[in-house]
Image (cartoon, one colour):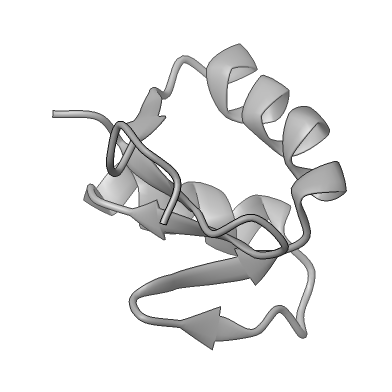
Amino acid sequence: MSDFTLDDHGSLVLLKPETPEAFSWLAENIEAPIPWFAGGIALEPQNMSALLSGILGDDLSWEPDSPTRH
């Protein structure tokens, strides 16, 4: 199981924490206000690269929520 799942809807990406470590990482690394939607934080795709690099850099993991775009 990954720490985060990434659900890509095209113009909106949901980053969903799946472990207690992932919830802690978000609390420490994401400044409010970030909109929560469907169990994750809602972001524009252009903001994801740096965020995912930070997740991996802190020895956490992520995987796509689904193999295809919705």
